[in-house]
Picture: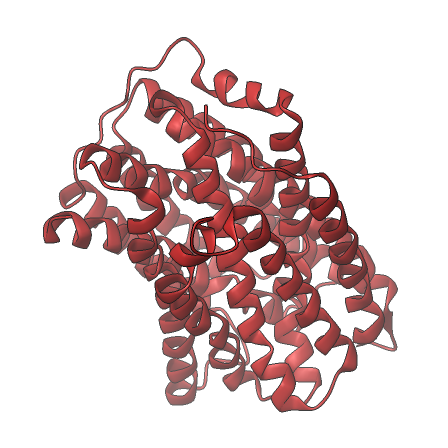
Length: 402
């Protein structure tokens, strides 16, 4: 891989997840704290991205496979998204913030699968193996998430902005603007593959295969459980005595571990000749989330709560990223964008939306005298994750490539 291509793809992956990582882990603390929103309202704010991921990736995948170059879709979506994030930072009422975040999410959700598709398309164009070369680019996603977490913590230490929490939205807006400029001027040209009439229909036809259907359904449920992590962890840590200004850096441990696992372990794990292969890598990933929730249920000591963030990082690598690589291996060249769009629509879309609703309802029901009963809350995702792992072990087999 040429260094120019590597820098361009790494920049795209870094900025894509830096934007998300700037607000997603800590916005809930602003909603539940200074803005005094309920768990259900917080769940609906966080549901805007999953809702958008049900629609936008499929539309963007269709456009990228048939009509428009990927870099132009990415640039326009991030430019509009930057404006909307600046507007969102000034909203303090639920309805206004929900509407703005929904429009923002429609823009951002379109870009998520396209960054992967851009990478996989360029690797294929350069005759490179995605399973061995994509981890070198995927590594920049957790690095970005970790760096913005530590940067936000440093900002809050210096300027004392942690209590109001709107700084995370301003930070994400600036990053989104930088991403837009990079897409317009520095991304490699990735024109549409001129697929047939409906490339997304070709991708969705794979749901007729039992093993692929099991993969999508389990991925959808397990990914949805991440919303208990995103909605609950920041406030949970503060309730356990961890200062608000230290929460972003504490949660960023997950991304530091994710980066190391992506670089050193991912290619080995998904290679059936050397490691456990795709199936057992996915099982290990889901099991890491189960173990993390068991530590949360125990509620102490504080150091274990902080260090358990590493399990989220491992789970993301071995389940989410490994699943995206598996989907690419199963896709034909002319539906590569649509296949990634289908995976994102199922996991980041339907899965996270249902997970958001479930997490919001559970958090409200387990809130007494304005205090969350965290042990009861985290028993729910723990039990569901356990069932999913059993189903996956018993029913899933790696389907042959298309």
